[in-house]
Length: 262
Length: 222
Image (cartoon, rainbow over all chains, first blue to last red; front, top):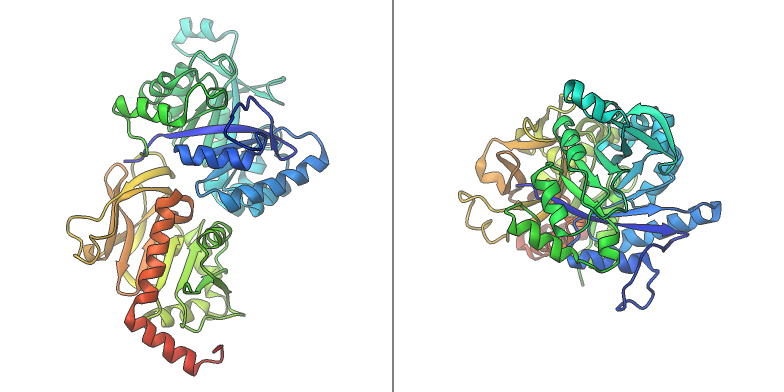
C-alpha cells in the first residue's frame, strides 16, 4: 500500500538555509545540504527546498546548491520559490531537482504547466497553490453547502480573483503531477492543517495533494491523513524548531493505523 | 574493483539521478548511445522517465534498440529502471506502440486510485516466485508511475506491491531485470538493491565468460 509522505520544507536564500534553524549537532547550521541529509536519516520521505532568493547572484548560487543536494541525497526533492519561466525549470531539473514547484508564474501564464509537463513529464511538475478562504465562503455555505477558496499569488500578497479549486482542476488538465496546497489562513499559525479545505481538494482531484500550512504536532498529520485524505503533508517550523522529529510524526501516524514508510 | 556498467543516455529523464547514485556507490560507468555503442562486455542500465513511446523513439534512432535487444538476447545483463523496465515488454498502452519485446506482456494504465502513483510503497517477492528470487529482500521504495507492466508469465515477477490491488514492481528473468521504482531515489534500501543487481551480474559465471570473449574479440579491450 502506498504510504503517506512526510515532507520537511527548508527555506533557502543564496544557497543557505535561513529559517528557524536550531540544531546544535551540525557544524554549519546554515548548510541546507547537511540539514537535508539529517532529515533523510530521520526518515523524511521527500524534501522541499523553497528558494527565497531575490538577487540574480543568488539564483546562480541556488543552482549550485541544487547540484550539491542532488549529489548527496538519496531521496526525492522538490525545488520551488520564484520559478518564473521554462528556462528556470529546465535549469533546476538539469541541476538535479526531481520536481519543480510553480506558483505565481503558472497563474500568470498557465501554458507554463503544459510546457513543463510535455517536455519533462507530469511527474516533475508540481503546482503550488496558496489558497485563502473567501470572505463570502460562509454565506455560500448557508446557501448551498459550498465553501470557496481563492488563489493568492506573490507570496500571499495579491489576490487575482481565481477560485482555488477551479484553478487546481485546470492545473490537472494542463498536466500537473501534484498539487501543493497551502492554507493561507493556517500558514504559520500552528493550529493544525485546514482539514475542511484539504478534504475538498483531495476528494476532487485525481492527482496527489500535498497539504501544507498549520502543522502543530504529530496529531496534525494524523488528522490531515485520516480526516482529509491528504496524500502527503509538508511542514517547516515544527521540524526546524526541533519541537518534533520526523520519527515522532511517523510514530504517531503509524499508531493511528495509517501506512507510513518505516 | 567494482564492475563497470554501461549507462544508456539516449532515453532522457532520470539519467542524472542514476548517474549520481552510481557515483555515490563508487560504481564506474560508461555512457553509451549510438555514437558510443555498447559491445556487450558490460552490464547495461537503461533509466527512463516520461513517455513509453518517446523513450522507444529515442532508442530507435540509428537502430540502437536493435543493438540493445541483440546484446541482451546474447546474455548481456540488462537493468531497466521505470520506463526502462516497461519497454522490455511487447506493448505500451501509453503511446499505443511496441516495446523491445524481450519479455511477454504489456504495459497498462492504473485504473484505480490517484494517477500517477507518487511515493513510497512496500515491495515483496510474491509467494509464487521462484526460489532464486525469494532471497531478494522486501522493503519500501519510491515510485512515480501512471502505467504498470502486466507480464504474461507470473514467474517473471520479481517484486509485487499493492496500489489498490497487486501490481508488478520488478521483473527478473535470466539476465534481464527491471525495476518499476526508482532505486536511486529510494534511500539506502534502494541503493542496496541496485548494488545487489550489479554484484550479482558481475559474479555471474556465464556473463564473465561472455565478457572475456567480448573483451578478447572487441576493439575496446584495454
